[in-house]
Image (cartoon, rainbow, N blue to C red; front, side):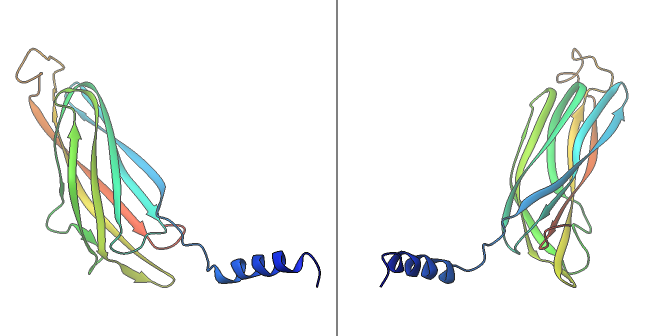
Length: 167
C-alpha cells in the first residue's frame, strides 16, 4: 500500500459525499426612477431583481432615495388590489423601517418573502408591487409646515424574485 493511499481515500470520500453547492439569493439588478414634485426632484430605487431565490425565503431589502429639497419617509405598503403578479403569486412584507424624519436623503429597509411563485418552464418567479410614500417639500422652503413638507408622492416599486440564475 502506498503512503498516499489513506490521503487519497479520505479526499475521495469527502468529494463524493458532498452534494452540489446550493445557490444563495443574490441581487441581480436595481433600477431607479426620478419624480419631480414642484421644485423638488426625487430619485428613488424602484425596481430590484433577485435570482437564485427559494420560495418562503425572507429577503432583506433596502431602497434608497434622495431629493434636492426636504423629504420625509411616509410609508411602504403593498399596492392594492394586486400586490403580487402573476396570478397565484403571493407573499408578505414586514419589518418596515424608514428614514428620514426630514432631510434630503434616506432609505427604507424591509423584509419580503414570496410564499408562492409562478412556474415558467425551468424557473419559478414572482413580482411584488409596492408603494413608497414620501412627504415632499415641493417649494423647497423648509420654513413652511413641518420641515417644509407640503405634499406627498407615491412611487411605485417592484421587487422580483426568480429561482433561476437570471430573471
